[in-house]
Length: 208
Image (cartoon, rainbow, N blue to C red; front, side):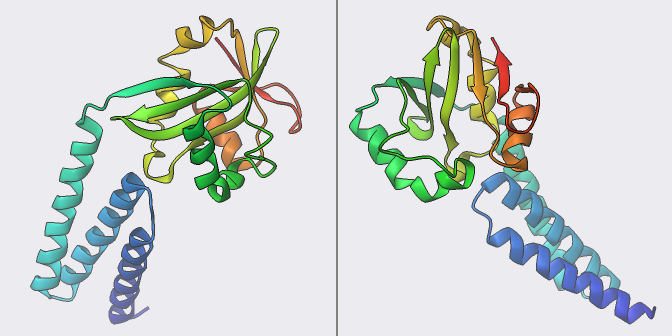
């Protein structure tokens, strides 16, 4: 393959990566992909001898690195807020995000599936997630486990399921069950500590 063609492929790849990053809503994946894309553009500019292209994109690389460091080192305040099934804001929250919720819980009905145990997760006082479920003999079966798009970096999941197990225990909850609706949700459950109990139709369990 000719060198010029290889350089063009690198340039097109960089363009695609940057374009995809700008269409992402989650800030951390956006920054990471934009970092890779601008880094590829830096290489492209160097290879073709275009120092303005290389220099500008190297500067963007540094900006992305700076903000990623800020994101991972920033101290955020998270809080679990107990709410009733009839809470007006909870109802508004699930109705506002109902289309996005269906991507993770296809059968979720905002009017019927809000359970007896409900909580909003606040991130720096901003409602960033909602959890709802039914409690039976020490098992909380989740009907909703949702985080808004801009906060899907696993901080809320770790805060809930790893750092605050005592919060659930104080409610008499010994284990949490969640039914994976697809491979993506199953991977999420495994990452936050849930364990498969059998076939794909059986729930994943988190023992507290």
